[in-house]
Amino acid sequence: MAVRSPVLNVMGNAALKAARGLVRDFGEVEQLQVSVKGPGEFVSTADLRAERTLKTELKKARPGYAMLFEESGAEAGSDPRHRWIVDPLDGTTNFLHGIPHFAISIALERDGEIVAGVIYEPIRDEMYWTEKGVGAYVNDRRLRVSARRRLAESVIGTGMPYRTRGDQSSYLATLGSVMAATSGVRRMGSAALDLAYVAAVRFDGYWEFGISAWDIAAGILLVREAGGYVSDMAGGHEMMSSGDVLAANSHLHLPLAALIKESAHAGRSIS
Image 1 (cartoon, rainbow, N blue to C red):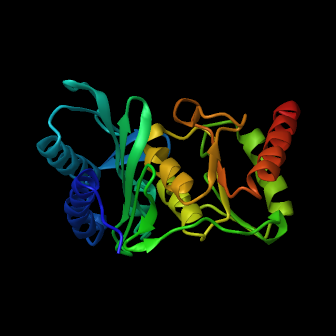
Image 2: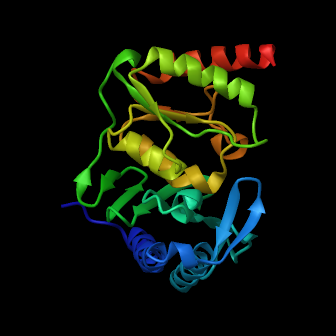
């Protein structure tokens, strides 16, 4: 049985505590107070409560660490080497519409590198966890990415721009190309779980443009420790700053990257 380190226990316990409130609020989703925070984006009292719980638990265990949270932003710490990167509710729109597909994502960054991550999906009670050099797991099961070699046999996850966000022409061009080349494309509404699903062989790959660091930080390490490849669209490692991310196994990463890059360029040319 895999043994989690002390820091992973801190992360996992914080996620479980915050999840109890999310599950309770999910059962009463129609009564939640919801305020609009931008086109197509929402922040709920459940989201804010989960953030407060996570911040309290993480500070209690590691008081000097800096923090980056989706709702409250960045907070400096006395320890310049370490930073928590946290999304207390990834999949807020799903949550607020009663769709049971959302997660808590916690990553630990040390000297600018992600070294540990937890993604907890409370409805399925699945705890994805990883630490650099240790491997990737869901609960007690070791994860390895898909072994598929052909795009035609693959299912690929993605996230779509909405309303006026993002370059929709470019995205639609990439979507059309990937749809034509694969067995299917899935848009589930949680980037953290999309990456977790690549690690868990539910998806063979995943791409998205303009995503936030707290959505992908834990998932990047999870995929890598499961034997997969994660890059930005140029093949580099600027996902956290660019917001563009592509994940797949060693057989599919390059052909999927080439397909997306070519179709995105064509889409921009048309627009």
